[in-house]
Length: 47
Image (tube, rainbow, N blue to C red; front, side, top):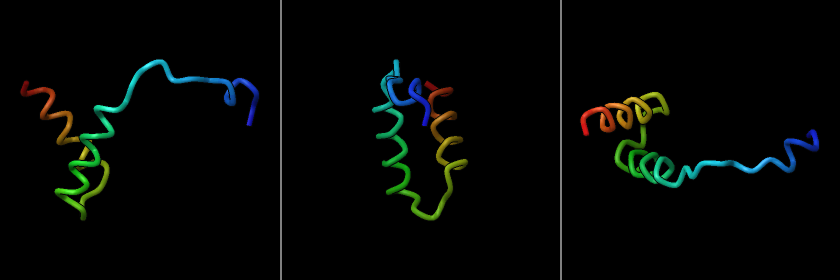
């Protein structure tokens, strides 16, 4: 791993997205990431 990768810190907070993904994974455990991603995109588009 390069030194720049080791010291890199994320600028944005992904807590909201992670929470939505965990909720969808609990609701639809047999679906894949693409389904969860599509559901989150559609929900954000409808608001």
